[in-house]
Length: 100
Length: 164
Image (cartoon, rainbow over all chains, first blue to last red; front, side, top):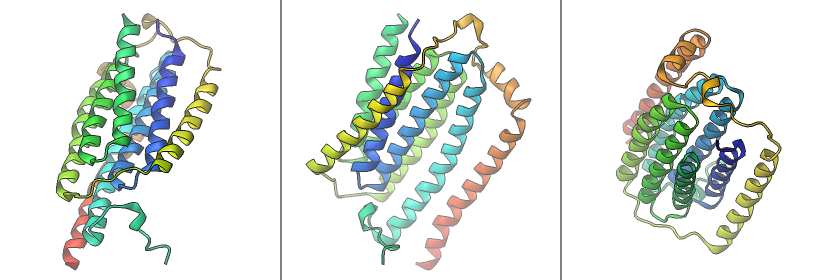
């Protein structure tokens, strides 16, 4: 039997990698992928806790997280394409419309 | 045996996640994110979440990552970007601090996983019964959310065309 904490540690490490990706990258697409990585880390800990308590409610929540992530990706990628058409770049440091 | 499989999937997931954030070209990031999602699906199977492992492969590694791949090819980004050393250092420090603090709080979780026999399997049958009885309202709301997202994506890209 694998100890519970191993799954949770894996989830924590993946989440931290996602946070580091959001912090160090400038490409909007890669930042978006790092957010997906964080969502997946959370899904893993939800499934682990669901197994720890012995019922399926946590897994249902993961199902809805995946559905919302699909919707988020559709809108987010459409936004990235719109920004690229306007600026010819998806570097987040060049998006300073709100600063001026 | 279980522990061996867990180690393989975990090492694969962490290594490919690191490739996602350090790779200069976005296309390699997309492809290694697919590897991460696949190995997470393997770990879901170890946790008896069979239905979610299947959804993970079909929806995440399949549909969502193909969408990312399409956008990467559509945008045709030429500049590949080198991460400055200062940012690498800051990312490692902040990421490490978050990982350590979360891991420290997770060491307090003392309960073991329940044995396989004491829990309903997370297959399509049991998940379906829960989805269509207790969780039928959120399920319907999720369908409306997906419809709104589809319309939103179309509107975003169409408006831009008209202005040009």
